[in-house]
Length: 328
Image 1 (cartoon, rainbow, N blue to C red):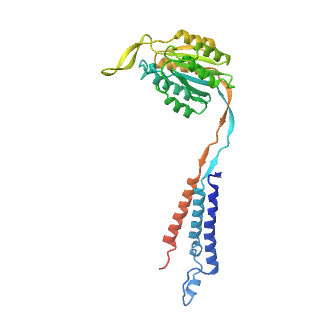
Image 2: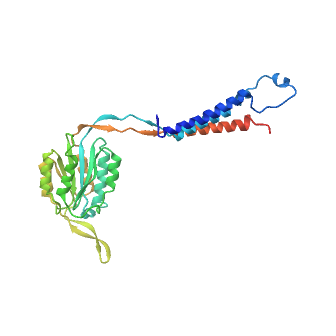
């Protein structure tokens, strides 16, 4: 146990001084007294137990003050940090966030379906280090490699189409994902690249990014998202928002080439169920050992001391009210 504000513990001197003052008054005879003509009536009956109980209220008050001081010093407990060997791999989810991902051939749309299924995938792999990269006309890291599932899921929920300039820079998205894990010492490193379009932006070609991934021994699993033929897409017309059918264009030869170059596999997802099955298949990949730090867990203990102080004060009040009523 340790204290957040240990310098406040010097206030324990106050209840100690109050208790010493009470003892001094008892010993020196400075307590209230009553003059009577004879003590025979009192000495004949022996000493009452109240003679000892009368010392309890000052003791209870001093104890309550001590407990209050300890509570405001904020006592805390901590579990020790240790390193734990677990089974897992390094995975980066590279997700297309171009406006075409708003097409509604998935429920409710491609991006929302991809996010929901990715969150389920993240939740089912608690021992893997995972990261998130998003790309459209540009790319950036939404979350670096981490084992913090809560952070991953919250950042995945924040993914949306208006984060960056529109377009489809598959090469940039793949290169950014490679950069996030090129220094990883994991034996198994995987990128899951999800897109619904054709590469039309970016400074790095998808083929070059695939060769870089191959150099670092990173497998890339590519997923083409979109129904066959046409898909409903929300558009703004002169009469307000509308949904129109647009042609689905996915560069499947390119995605197959990226997967083949890096030793991965290409998948085509045409609906929510198929996309979930693809993530489940990727989830059955081999696992390697990795070492994860378990961080210390802190627990505040001040409430226990505050409750104990309240009990002491209530006990003092009850004693004074019912057992030790003073004469006026």
